[in-house]
Length: 359
Ligand SMILES: C[S@@+](CC[C@H](N)C(=O)[O-])C[C@H]1O[C@@H](n2cnc3c(N)ncnc32)[C@H](O)[C@@H]1O
Image (cartoon, rainbow, N blue to C red; front, side, top):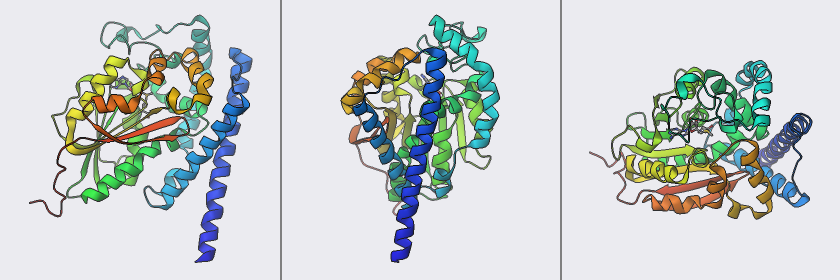
């Protein structure tokens, strides 16, 4: 027993140290690239650097503990999708000069023809992050996850995974089963990384849905999600979700809120509340906000100017939990995970009868 405990403790330490080292190495490479080619300097003060390191350690520590506790399979924390990333590297290298030139010109209006003709809302039709085609191209969809991984030092999935334990707890509390699966919608699902992890955690107990405004990101999600995952993907605007009222037990969203103007954020949250059943769970992950980490103010505020994130500054000055409450939801907890903030909320009202009591 004691030996098993020691072995687990050793694995935990190795896991945390190796992931922190990997994040440090990716960060150094990224800084070298951005200093040499973009003339960006690292703004981190010693206090900010110490805060980032502590938050990083806490993220991986919690990740390991939650895998150990059975919220998700160990396989999720053991590796990154290396094959997917390796395939994207040559395209990323070929694309870098275009992105660099766009950053140099401050140009965020270079979009494919068919995207520029009023098909998409004004806030959306732009080169977010100065990336080629914004969200409106196949190359952008193929490169997105690798770019995010490089920017955040291999922590992106670990941060998204913070959404999984509350969902698994809800599934267990409801007695979700293959006969009565939890109905879950991921809003702004992008290329489907969160859906993939939720599917691994609840392989038979959840019926998954994803919605995103980009047909290209939806197509990419179809390409990379496991064939046996029970998931339906819809291309539509989250301001008007194509689902009837109270049709989901859980609604999640990762990194959508900072990408839209305040009034759109309010509409999306109201829609998330509308499609959720009374008693259902909403779990939202997005960037930390200024009040969460005053010592990281310079880092947080440097981000939007470098990566063309026009609504990010408004978002970080706001209070995500307050906006979620304004949408008619009851925020029950708010936690931080490295550079992510996670807000959990419920829709007031009686929950559904548990499956064992139903009928
Ligand atoms: C930063 S990405 C996050 C994607 C994904 N959730 C993740 O964790 O990587 C933001 C996503 O929101 C989508 N999006 C932005 N505005 C939207 C809207 N109004 N309706 C639906 N999706 C939207 C984008 O197409 C993009 O895929």
